[in-house]
Every structure is written in C-alpha cells, then in structure tokens.
Amino acid sequence: MVFEIPRVKYTGQIREVVIGTGPKAVKVGGASCYPFYRFEGEMPNPPRVAFEVWDGAPEEWQEWAVEPFRDVISDPVLWAKKCIDAYGAEMIVLQLKSADPNGRNRPVDEVVEVVKKVSDAIDVPLLVWGTANDDKDAELLRRVAEMTEGRNVAVGPVSDKNYKQIGAMAIGYGQVVMASSPIDVNLAKQLNILLTNLGVNEEKVLIDPTTGSLGYGLEYTYSVMERDRMAALTQEDAKLQFPIVCNLAPEVWKTRETRLTKDDDPKLGDEKRRSVLMEAVTAMTLLAAGADIVVMRHPDSVSLVKDMIGELCA
Image 1 (spheres, one colour):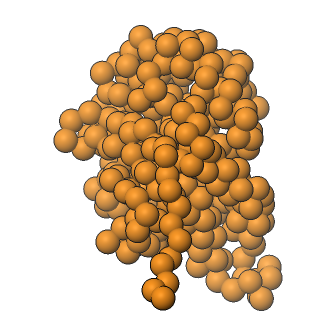
Image 2: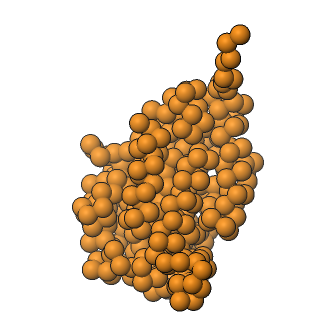
C-alpha cells in the first residue's frame, strides 16, 4: 500500500495588493496555501522585507542599532536613500514618531513636509506609519494621503475610530490603507467590513494585526495570525483574505534583551548579535504565521531574513 501524505484542500485565496508605482512597485498576497506550503498551493508573490526610517533622529536607540545609519540618521531622506542604495531596500516604512502627542508632538504641517520629501526622493514603494493616536492620525494620515497623491502609498495604522476620515482620503487619492486591530481576528474582520462598506477597494487593504516581539507576546500574535489565515484559506472568509503587514522593528528593539550589554549580563552574550537574532527570529516567526510584509531595522537582521525567504521560495 502506497502511503500518501495528506494535503489540506484550500477553497480561498489571499487578494493581491500593489504598493507603489512604476517598475519598482511591489505586489503582495495572492497565496492559495498556508505560508511556504508550496507543495499544496501557490505563493506567486514572496513575502517582502521593508526597512524602517524615522522622520527624525531617534534619541533612545542602542549604539549597535544606530551604527549602520550614523551618517544619515538625522536626515530621513538620506536615511531612506542609504537603505535603498547600500542595503537593497525594496520598500521603505516612514515611521512618524515625531508627531506622537505623547512625544515631541510635532505639528502636522512639518511632518507632512518630511513625508513629501522622502516620497519625492525614492523610487521604491513607501508605507507611512502614523502615531497610533486615533485623533492625531485622523488629521495626519489624511494629509499624507493628499500630499502623496499618485504614489500609491500605504497609510496606517487605520483603526475603527478614524477609518472614515482616513479611508475617505485614501479612496479619493488612490492610496492603500493598513487596517489595524488589537490582536483579535473578529475585530480585524469587523474593521475590514467597515472599510469596504465605506467604499475602500478590496485591492487597497492590508491587515495590521498588531505585533509582539519574541518573548513579549509573540505567541499570541502568531496564533491570531494563524487563525486569520485558516479562516481566509480554508473557511472562505472573504473579509480576511487580505495581505498582512507586521511593524515589528519598534517592538523588538524596545525590549530589555536588545538593550542589555554583555557587561550588564555576561550570560546573554554579545549585544549586537543577540539583538539582530531577536529581530530576525521575530520576523521569521511572523512570516511563518502568514505575514506578507515585515518591517525591520538592522541590515544584518534583514539579510538573514531575506536569505531564509529565498531558500523557502526557491
């Protein structure tokens, strides 16, 4: 008797979403199988790694995180261009940290001008990540959508509190939205329904499930993303059939393990190597759970993850 490996029968497919314009535009999604299960279905578009860039010089980054960008870290335009030219970035995520009301609370006009400069200076897709403050983002991301008209950028996080304001501008200016919900499948589905009922094109939606770091809630994020993909691919839940983006870099690099030096705790070993591995392992775990875009910080971490994606998709 010949043994046959049981295979999952998929009845759903993840929608494809295009970010950016021109020859360097990126298409994500389209899978008709679980992540990297290409023996059961298709993954026409491999997952992508995006480099994060902040809209102002970070003040609390570790020395080993600053090191690769020391010469450009005070200029978001030069920083983004170095990610592309020196490290081969295929996508840039501009983190609008300086606009945070709990931080510098920089005026919207100033922040939007930075977004415009970065958008004009690069030819790869741009994702713009706001402050996660619903009221501030309602104004800020609306202005970003307007200012970057014609670039097909992705803006977020969009929540159930500000989806009408941001979604309407995204529709008007042809942008992609990143729908963010707090690690819950039902809430993610509900927000997707609200956006599509508003009129947002289903080919213009990415899901942000909210991301935890290795050792800091990653297993909960993983299980929610896994349930999301199961519902989308095997239960024909059309309102969950969207690509997933995970903004993991800020979560990883704020952890205790990426901040302690080997002098603080010798048993933890070299701090740079430890931090790079924490970011890479977090990213690969999320990719295995179904992420289509992972947002990362350190070039060494990115290199490890890109190599792994290449091997799994070869």
